Amino acid sequence: MEAAEITQMVFSIVGGLGIFLLGMKNMSEGMQAVAGDRLRRLINAVTNNRLIACGVGTAVTCLIQSSSVTTVMVVGMVNAGIMTLTQAIGVIMGANIGTTITGWILVLKVGKYGLPLLGFSAFFYLFSRRDRIRYTAGLFMGLGMVFYGLVLMKVGFAPLKHMPGFEAWFTRFQPDTFFGIVQCCLVGAVLTAVVQSSSATIGITMGLASSGVIGFPTAAALVLGENIGTTITAFLASLGASTNAKRASYAHIIFNVAGATLVVILFPIYIHIVAWAVGHDPGQMVMVDGEKTYPYILGGIALAHTGFNVFNVMLFLPLAGVLATFLKKIVPDKEHREIPHLTAMDVRMLDTPILALQQSYREIVKMGQINQKMLATLKEILVTGERNEQLEGKIFKRESIMDIMQKEVSEYLSKIMAGNVPHEAMEEGQHQLRYADEYESVSDYVTNILKLRLKIHNANEKISEQGQKDLLDLHEHVTGYIEMINDAIEKENKDILPKAQSQSQAITHLVKKYRNSHLSRVGTGCATPLKSLMYTDMLTAYRRIKDHALNIAEVLSGEKL
Image (tube, rainbow, N blue to C red; front, side, top):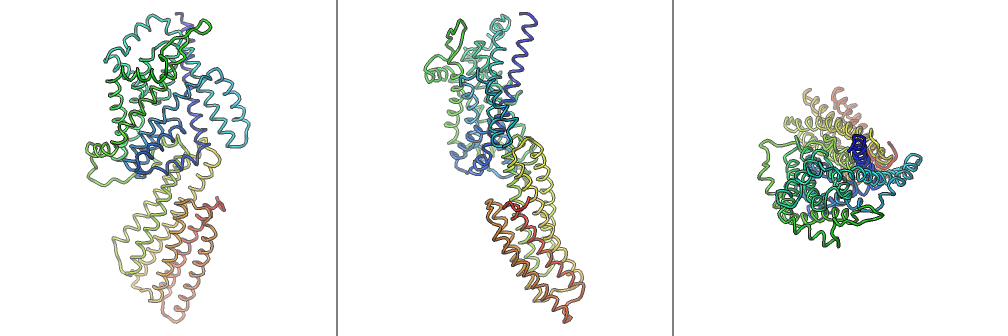
């Protein structure tokens, strides 16, 4: 073979693979944008019911077109303490089934329509002003790129079967013996681990098979290895993560390796079952217009991929609890208590901006809950009227945690919004930035009230009985207000504003009433000017807490950005 032909072959393969991968990325981004709300609802639907968790994993992976992204996302959620190990195992098993959708997309015999589909979709993508149409066009543009990329790879691989050297080399990787099956699996595993995309290696395998370079048994053995190689992404995501996150990634590895090992042992039976299900010998060659074609091999590969993963899930899903217990033994808890990291720390979550926004939203919900805890601790201090360094330390520590959370969430959201995201996602990101800022401000004012209380104590002053009663009553009203806003944020209740405005006015009226009452006491000489100033500052701080909470309600309802 001449150098020019080899160069042409390499260019065709590399170019085809590049277009294929770019198409997968566009498909994923388009599906995420079009199905954004559905994705968020799916993630929220994850429960300890392993069948539901598995179904969620399957559906999410079908939508985002990448089991690697799903498993990285799961590791991040476990790391953040949002998902339990048992839930994670169920979702990961479902992700393995969901990733097989790529193979079935490639089975569609529309390769020749890939280029026109890409072209027509590109016009809508470039010139449409409506986000939904634009991202739907991006989805189909990605689909066209996937089909066209596969055609280019098929054309590129075709000359290989006429190269004696390659044919001689490849005969060493024939799955006609147990050792040969293992060799093919290892090739598939290593290739997928390097590329970090099972979809890409499935595309390469299908390109080789449809060109007649490899037979169906070899392709099926490569697919088994590709299922092992895809676990490397989740493993890398777990490095430096919490113990539970490591367990989730190890569950993925054990699940895929154990299933592949079992199928390798039963490989001849497995091949016969797939051939029976296809209805033809998947490797059968048919002459069409004087050219050799393999019309059944793509369907055979897709079925082999899906069949393996469905069989694996049916076998191991009932054992999810046992697997979780086993992982807790081989990966024991650390002696010191671990602080879950924010999901934002894993930049690979940015591959799924819609789901990344869901994770940052949960962190914002957590910020609201921390504010409630701070107010509850503050009440204990106010009720006793005495110094309590342990309780005071809790408030100061939580306030510093809120500062860190606000900073990390803001940085994370900025990275999401810097990417190619739909207008709705951009708006949601802006809202979350505002929520995080308002919640952090609430924590500052709670801390300010504590500091004012300490100043009064250090000045050997005491709040009058009526002043104490008024302060605690205002505290109860503001705490209830914060709880109401937090509940609205957690449930995404956008109809909260009228109630929030009404209660806001009531609290404002209460602050004025208690300030006037206090000034009356000052006029009778019951309070010193210093204590009076600090007491009124405490009343003002409660009003500011309420104002920041009202801002959150206004942003949630769409009244403010």
